Amino acid sequence: MNIADILRWKATSNSAEVFTATPTDSVRDLLRSLAEHNVGALVVVADDAVAGVVSERDIVRRLGAEGADVLDRPIAEIMTTAVVTCASGDSIDGVAEIMTARRIRHMPVVDGGQLTGIVSIGDVVSHRMRQLESDRGQLEQYISG
Image (cartoon, rainbow, N blue to C red; front, side):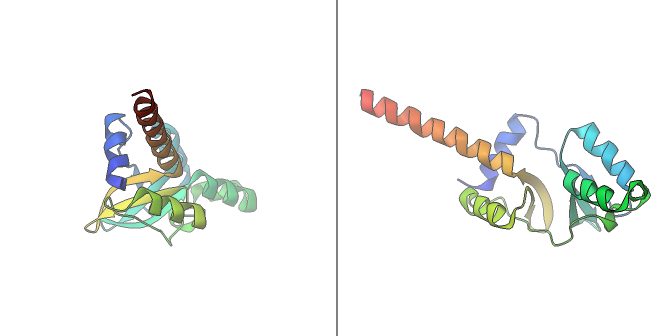
């Protein structure tokens, strides 16, 4: 199983769209976008390339440290710039290991230099649960003959 399987599943559940922001957007605009799209993170894109990822956690940490002035600053000041990406052909197990080891909750999917999707740790866990249910059903069918 690979990341493309998760992206296909997300497409059937109408959650495949990747929401993006630019480094110059304000944190206040970012908050509006997160709320509007009901997501926990946005991919930051500059010059048609992934420049960063920014999440609710990034905002909360900066608000706690610096106060409400952060809201009027550009996203570039709070986003994570050392972005770990994957490709749609990467194995789900391999991506899960990376996400767990590096404590990454959102990973952009990049194919041929283009942003093609995003997977969250929740997507990975959900896919694994569906796979386990399928395996269980097959085993029950095999046992019952």
